[in-house]
Length: 249
Ligand code: PGA
Image (cartoon, rainbow, N blue to C red; front, side, top):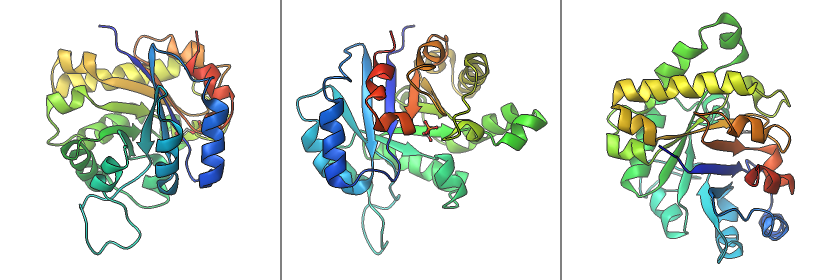
């Protein structure tokens, strides 16, 4: 089954609102590719200006974080209905920076995945191993466990709409990319885990991205692999090079 590729930028904590609008203008003509879904996942404060700046283009809007309650006394947080009303379609959940720096665990991440679906947002669920786990050789078990935890009580129909991003932590922002074979090995394994948890049709439908120092020179090879359906791109999403990744072939 041909899965549609999804190339998403994770802007992280970069770009003030005016810089965000400027970046949208810079990228506008470079990110046109009808064959792939293009997404900008942007800081909360940039969501409204970016929604305006990408109007009439092929770019879809994503957010980087939210909290599981709809409203109330949660100082500093932002809710799924707020994101939805602002035009957000995709939401990054379980990024290693949120797991490691902000202490998010798999129980919260699972609650976020369920809440996102309930609110009509499409999760980009991140998973991936540390360098220590990679060296110890136990990375596959680790990732399989993350997926099982994070998808507890998520239905097959929901998983068909899900995007999973495999992001080895040792490759994020380090310039050290997993080889295409290393990335393919894990993305294939994730699809097998989904087949085991659900069924083959669900596993064939779920889109699995690679993330971690993906750039204009390594994207084509990574994206040529059978089980790699896209990329979650940090640093290179903030530059004109992002257009080259979107148009990798
Ligand atoms: P990077 O970040 O492309 O800068 O390595 C990827 C990510 O963290 O999503």
